[in-house]
Length: 230
Image (cartoon, rainbow, N blue to C red; front, side, top):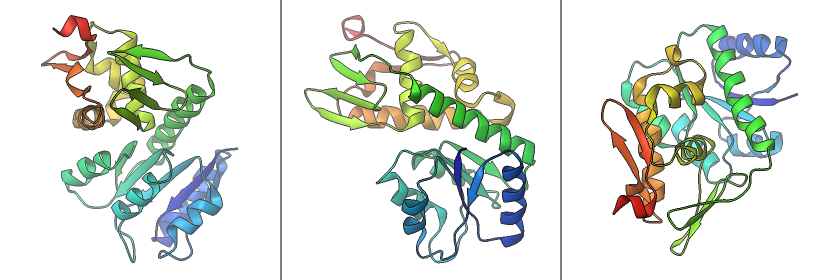
């Protein structure tokens, strides 16, 4: 049974979401003291976090930053505000998905199922190490290492990198990436993919690898091998 941590201060909505998720056999935990979210997170050790942006004490962005300093657990943001920047900020902080309130519960459940299936089925596989542009990539540990150093990527970032490297020197369409990541393109803004790829590039820049992920306008993205880039 997967454990979900639902960080939502609207008690009516919290109980409604928990009831629906419990009926799908998820174990759902909440927050009693919103100044001690990290203590609850550490105690629960959830498989996925659902977090509202507007919270008492500190907002959801703050707690996302805190969680990301300790864990790559999947995170879904909820927001009642109609601000496009909320979604962009969520993805930049390492969230896996974003939902605007009010939302349909079936959509939330579909997103949760897709993320859990992608993250934990994928992580359960013992994936061999691969090399790309002089770097060693450990898909099991989400690590990219070269002579410059080592970085740990989020689940979305490593998944995008895996898809691109599997078809290196070939364009992977935006539609194929969206469908692989979120299962249903109808529920995902095209900008969500752009934000995720840009975040991946920014992380890879720490190892001087970001420029090997190229954008093909109107088509998709391509992972270039080092000798093909010259």
